[in-house]
Image (cartoon, rainbow over all chains, first blue to last red):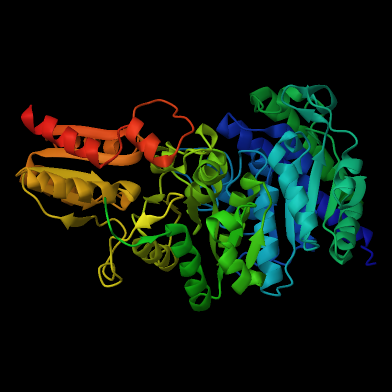
Length: 285
Length: 316
């Protein structure tokens, strides 16, 4: 199994902080959107887009590309920031998130934004879409991998379990699902809203290979992604144990920031905190 | 009654899929445990590697079809009309219509002529549901020959499309030559007339042709239009018919709300045309179990009622 040197990881951690800053600025400017679940998803997205996935921003339709599907579409700001930092489009597009006449829709729209694979935002669809992509890949004997990120609360949706069954039935080992396990959904704690535990047992009883890791440890995420890709004859799910609102102290584990953007004061504090984190990482480099 | 040859449009769909499977190596077929009824099983036997059984999980099937389309495949997804539209509305809306995905939804068992299975299986709202979705083409072929042609066109042309046929065998209206030039969005004048126009779709074309004959004997000249495409609607043909005949009856195995009749009414109003007009269809009610013939009679969707409504409308 490939190891990753700490210098490379530091760079990625720095990237993650920059993505978080984009998210805060985007949501502050848009005056709407979802900070909590965007911030919790960042580290996995950084690992995927800046290291693990085979993709080419200059050729977003390359038939051999690995695909990433953001099933939890409300984390669009995180995806857009990562796509912009990968140069799928210009960074200044981020300034007009959710604005009339602009490219970046409130939730991902595949017809509008280069690099967005599926139009999501209505929860529960992404893994089914991924099944189609993965089956097409098998049919064409392509080597691409399909990654799909789901919110933990999203797995309340019945369609997710239809898709989980189908991926197992067709032994879609070219699919890796990632669950952003931050334990919070709009109405509260996932275990109080609609009990999800045991997440591991649920997926594993449907025939999936299950990996559980700290969803903010980029080295562990990268290793898990390698392990998932190497695992054959079964689809793999990586349960990412995350913190909703990660990286901004007053947003962490605060369900009130699921779908409420920061006001000016909150934005200033958040950026200050993230700047400090950035400095710390730069010094460590 | 008609002495025309009876053929099953579902079987025509199965045959068309086999022809298309040969022609398009990127065509795939998905079904949700109804392949014997929708006849996708014919494709499954011929091209097993390109047939995907999805189980009784229609929502996953529709989103999955969109995933296939994103990889350049031409997916045909089939199930009964109730499950192909209402049950999976959000999946069709987001992953297929909004995404402008090249997914072809081919539904069978539309309308009340499904018969004895009752309300749970009688889809009377699908035209309405699919018609309000931007990007979506909506069609209802009227016989086996036309079905085959339309399935071919669905594969040839890009875009999200929905087509539905009934369960029952249907009298053969067209020869292969008749449908050679058929185009999506272009209605057909099957019989010309000058007093009244029947604008019909799917299973209602044939009874309108019978009504045409019957009315002819009474000296009433009825035009019969086969509006196989409900969206995009052939507006020019409707406007011309309104001008030529001054009376229009629409007929469909569908609710009078939101389907072909509503679409024609909207077209007339949008063009400031006020003529004698009547919508034949199911009148905002759920129906019931019964034989197709009994139900079509009870809910006033047969040749006899077409004649009666035409007579009444012209008397007004």
